[in-house]
Structure formats: C-alpha cells, structure tokens
Length: 225
Length: 292
Image (cartoon, rainbow over all chains, first blue to last red; front, side, top):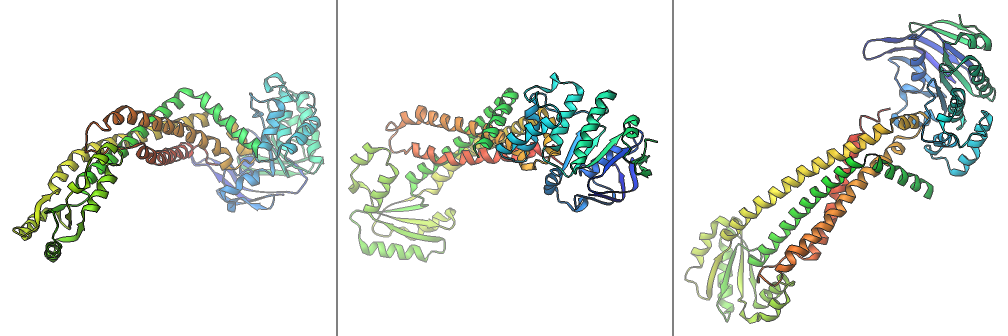
C-alpha cells in the first residue's frame, strides 16, 4: 500500500529531515512511526500526502508514484488517504454533522450519500447523539473523534495520523486508539506518528523508529524503545 | 445540481459580507473605472458621428454645379484618377447625398423633414493616400468646368481630431488606471477571503477537493463584485446621457448626438472589461495561496 524507497528530504533551508529512508507498508497494516521531536515523523506523513516532495528516492501510495503524479491528480490521491492531526482541524462555525459532511461535499458527493454516511460514521465513533453540537461544546476526545470520522467517512485506503493523541489525556487517548484499531480492522492501512510511549507499548504493533531522519529500528509487534 | 449552486451562492454572499468594506471599495472602483471606460467609448462614438456628418469620411469634396453635366463628371473623374495620390473617386449623386444626410441625422426628425433634398449638391468624393497632398488635387481641377466649390476637409478634421484625441486618450488613460486599481482591490478582497478561510481551505485540500472546487467561490465573488460595478456604470451612463445629451437633441442643429442605442452598444464592452479584470484579479489574488 505504501512503498518508500531510499527517500531523502532536504528542506530549502538546508535541514535534512529524512535521510535514505526505506519503508514498506502492506495493505491492512497498522504502523507506528516513533521518535523524538524533529526526528522526521511529520515530514514522513507530509511526504505521503504529497504536501512535500521527496528530494531523492521514490514514494508509492495506493499504487501511485508520487513524484510522477501531476498536481491536478493530487486531490484524487488524497481522497484515498484519511488524515488526523493533533489539533483536530475542525471548523468552529460548523456542527459536528456539517464538519464531517464537508469532507464529502467538497469532493462532490451527492446529498443522499452524505445523509446516509455521515450519521453512520458518527455512530461508529460514538457521537451519534451529538450531530448538531458545535466543536467548542465537545471535549478534546470527542473533537478528535469527529476529526477521525471526517478522515474515514470517504472510506480511504490509508489513514495517516500525526500525533492524534498529542492533546489528549491518557484515558481519552485509549478511546481514540480503540477507534483507530477498529478502523484498521475493517481493512484500512493505518500509519500513526506518535511519541506516546504507553500507547505504543500497549498496542504491540509494528514500530518504525526514526532518529535524526534515519530509520534506526523496524520491528513488528514492537514497543516504544 | 441546485444544491451545488445553493452552496456557491452561500459562499459568495458570506464572502461579501465578511469583508464588506473592501468589497465595497472594489465595487465602487470598478464602477468608476468602467464608467470612464464607457465615457471614452461614447466620446469616440460622438466624434465619429460628427466626423461622418461633416465629411462623409472623405478628405476632399468636389461639389458640382447644378444641374450636373455628365460629361464634366467623366472628365473630372478621369483627371483625378490619373493622379497617383488619389486612391478613390466616388461620384455621389444628389439622391445619395440626400440618403446619407437622412441617415446621419436620423435622430433629428425635424431636420430631416424640413430639408429639401434638392438643396444638397452632387459631389465627387475623393479619397487621398496622403491627405497632405491636397494641393495637387486643387491644381489639377483648377479652371475645369462644372465645379462649384472644392473643400479640403482634412485641415478641419485634423484640428477636430487633435482636440478630441487628447480628450479621448485622457479619459481612456484615467479609466485604465482606475481599472488597474479596481483589479488590485478585487485581488485584495479575494486574498482577504482566502486568508479568512485558510483553515477551511487547508481541510478542503486535505480531503481531496480539486483546486477548481476551492477556487470557484472566490472567482465568482470577484466576478460578482466587478459585474455589480459594471451594472452601476451602465445605469450611470444612461443617466448621464439622459441628463446631458437629451436636452441637446434639436437645440444644436446639424450635429448628430449619441443615441440610447449607442449606449446599449457600449454595454457588452463594459461587461467584458469588468469580467476580464475580475477573473485576472481573482486568479492573481489566489495564485500564491493555493499552491499544493
């Protein structure tokens, strides 16, 4: 599902974010990317989304060579990739329902699809009773669940999560991880960047550790360190 | 897809409300720019009408004595055509002169009804490659029979042109400057809209909305502002025409004035200019913001 071959990313200011990184992620896998701040986790995620271009090496996501993907096709790539971030990225002036519906609306899904799928997915993340609430009326954990619902409502092949529990307390984090696990179990490939040791240790999934832009460990059923 | 249209409309009106003051500045600048542009076009039209009335687009008019002697016409035409500087000689009969008169003064019925066509002379209308060479024509025709009067209209025309050209060019330049200002203001409203909604746009990009899907509301907003300005300019032009030109109908005889139809003819130009400015400005405003 994701193939990263000998990828190096050097930012314009000369910072080497990733150096000679090779990673292969199979369909349906659940992968943690761990490492200290500045180790290149976020860059890795951004490269997969084609928010940044690799300086060297090849990246394939869902069968597409990102370097050769023309700019106008990038949106179609992203429709196959769900994303969740530390800061939720919810629109404060839209309700829970509207926030999730927005993701389908702007890619041109018809209303009947939206009206069917959005309540369904919000039910799945346990917010079936808060459709008409606004983000600022929700707890952090609930907001992240809305964000997760939005990420998967279009049934992506891949879910990229960049520190999704970074702003949450431990017990709320566990709830989010249960949901990510649930999403993974229905066949979605999940790549999660984190430095939450407790979570990684508890899940016992594949762990790729980055340090100063290099892969220093790639371990199935691994722990944080 | 009515729902989509509904969405667009909502986006656009929201955008206009959000930065109302800047939008107002953009609309009013577009209005003034297009008003001046329209004025310049109408002035051109007015000048052309006056020139047509005065000369029938001919540099030299050789008025013939009445009644016309056909043989003299043939001789004169032959002599004129031998001159290298003459590009064209047209024999205008009294009937043709009458028809042209009626056409030029179509808006002044009293004039058309009261002028007896018989008073209009037949003439040879001579077009010159180089209007400065009028002297050659005068020399050749000197002393020939059948000529009532030779009128060199280029001198008069040049003076008329010189005055109106300055005026017309001046108005055009001011309107261009205003159009550029309008474009900058529209680009600015678009950019402010983008800034106000950068979070929304970020999410749209993340979930895979196409660039056009993201751009369309801003493009429409820019177009909307500019077309409101254009509409106001059109109304104002009609107002000016009614207020200043209508009272002149019939007061200054022998001068044809622009009509409502001329104002209508200007509308497409204003709309096109407004639309082009809006699209260019909106795209420019969006350019750097929307790089993936």
